[in-house]
Image 1 (cartoon, each protein chain N blue to C red):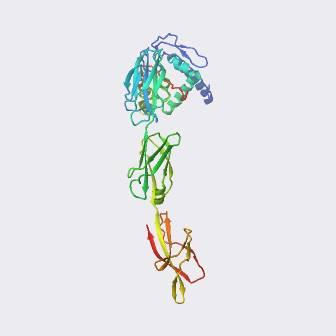
Image 2: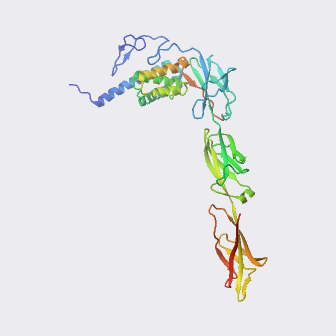
Image 3: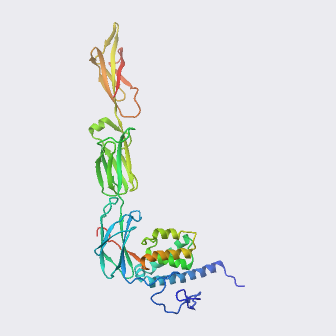
Length: 304
Length: 130
């Protein structure tokens, strides 16, 4: 059998099975394993700067990096300083990153060792920045209600942001890290009187750098119904205005006293409706005084 | 007539595999002494066994092609993550149209050209907060 390296006849030194051993002394330019033959490795070492994103993909943008005082730009995610003297330690620094990436916590590698016949790869992992838009809609209307306070908090880091919605475009948040975020909106007192929250006021959103990350909330306008009861008592000669009578509703559980409104005894209710289902009826729980011939009629319903 | 049973063949095959693996360990120690010292023999053996298993997944099972695969994994990492050609290399390794020896020959040629035969070693950043 011939040696794959020098092509000379080998010697069989079987222990349990055939064990072909070449007795030749091979030189320093031995071929590597396999078929291809390469020349001697370069004596010198080198440094490669390799820039990848947090998904492990090469960053195609040209990123500046400096080694031994020499600045270069990455091409297809790599920049090479070759050859470099070995037995020395080098400082490797990465330059300003494009806006699409978050600032790096560590921008330099100190004491990078270069060994003879090896390439030292210094890998910088860049995080792609994500953006998010929070929209607070009024019902089915397009765009966003303005001036609503929004809080965005990263679940896995201490990053917390606050913003306010702008009419139509919502609240933009930029340079976010990928990962789950809690998004909350808060209504101020005037807004609470105007809107009710249709759904949740807090959502968890998994931010992805490639996505638009549009988080939508919905508010509905609060409807107010003004309800007037005209209360009278039947007397032998006709009907008497029953001023001071009390009428109590089941929902909302409110009781009002009839007062003279011009010539009629009227009890007025203002009912707030925070529901998508229109309210068309109310239940009257009681009319006081009871046991009389008191009667009432709904005289007016005004919805606003 | 001499009859060799399957179990005996398996033992014989195991011996041959062990001898081949020992030879691969020696080659790594000789050609990549720094990497061998860094890894130690047990990890080098693990890397060899990983290469055999990984190669098998892609129909790469000849001694020559696996030997080259071991070398590439030693030089560029188990997933070739340190090679600028890693995406291409992964595609080439998984290309069923080419015979395994040819695939590995092409991979070695292309990946080693960029490094002039030198292995790539990852610089280790100190742990955060230290």
